[in-house]
Image (cartoon, rainbow, N blue to C red; front, side):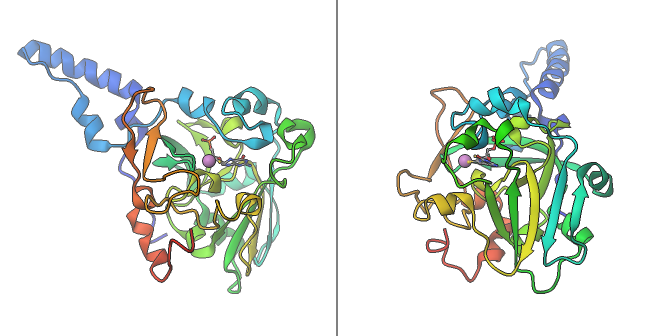
Length: 299
Ligand SMILES: Nc1nc2c(c(=O)[nH]1)N[C@H]1C(S)=C(S)[C@@H](COP(=O)(O)O)O[C@H]1N2
Ligand SMILES: [Mo]
């Protein structure tokens, strides 16, 4: 695609493991020269040092496995994720049940290190592995009448203890406008840190839309529907006043019950200073998608 988004960073640049090696090398050289150098400037230069694999896979939201942050890691292991098919239907040229293991080799997979901002005012940085949703949409052929993409999570009560409780109207549902879905930042992720997606993070495949709040990142996707109507979405159905369809990260539009101006970075320690939240989570390149819209009304 002509407008593929480019990420010049890989985890090799910024992982704690790489930092450790790098620091050792720098320190060895520095010691020889009698200088007290450390590798700290590398961290500052990127601003995107990923959270540890441990943080990313132990502090989760996945209500099908319980509403506590530790419930998904504890309960999602029982989910069967292989074989996995995704039904792609609605306004597409080639509808069908697509087997994930046949689909992935046809996609250009890569690593993307993105900021992640949950609507609950915490954040992480995650090195995702995945492919652009736009490439899948091109493969199945979107009909000209389509304006939105709707997504559904698997609903399998016997493996999902959290679905016994009517916290949300199962299955979990999400949606994007077609131009958002086609944006080169938007991914379908199949892994983290180069490893297959852990169940608690949405195995085997989940959405990543880095300029939106985390609840848009629907996990364990089994259905993708192209439609001409704005799809129903789980959190909006549960509480339309608190959770809008767009859910773009926006420090100027508070949640009715808390401020969105700042965030707490997971892994920063209990007394770490809160960081300012950035408009569109820092991904300014999406601003043109919303030029004609009042983002207070379309929150
Ligand atoms: N199916 C499903 N997808 C979901 C959720 C969920 O409860 N069920 N929680 C959402 C919320 S609120 C967030 S913050 C992110 C959390 O992703 P993570 O656990 O990988 O950090 O997943 C989103 N996707
Ligand atoms: Mo969230």
